[in-house]
Image (cartoon, rainbow, N blue to C red; front, side, top):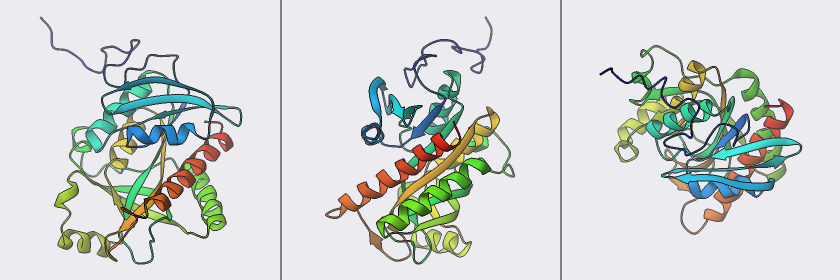
Length: 254
């Protein structure tokens, strides 16, 4: 009897969680959290094919301006995101771009705006299983600069804004107290979400490129939100984030 080495098990097989096999996806994947937002990516693609839908991980592929594109949902939080990135790497994905929702932590970050992450405050437990506390969770620089350029253009065309800065990745959505919100806002953190730190760390360790462009769903220091009756505006912002990611994939030939 020998101890299982998970880093060596199932490398060439259909993956256990995302249910995707090598050869079924492209080299770049857009990563929404919600499996029901994967079809939002597919709306911009041609020759769309659903590859798999297992647990929170739904995968579709298609084509955008001559580039083969994959979209896979991560589910909520760093644990499921780390699994998705690990298994996408095993089946041939080399670049990942998170497209999702995030809450603003600074004044003037308005619901419906776009956010491009320049790094993540690792306020999660998953990444500590991979690397020491001092290890940075940062995106690929070239990829991030391209996301910034396209986010600025798309935001300006829609009459909204694009913001850039350090995000925070949390584990516990309902543990974000007013005191905690004030603390991280005071640190200059731009926004908070739940997946980027794991995506950045796993991508770095596996030799992948990673970046994030999100739609602002709310502002935790100004009490503003797009949830409820105005959710259409949030969907429009999601679509702009997706377009920014797709244009980046084309520009950089990901």
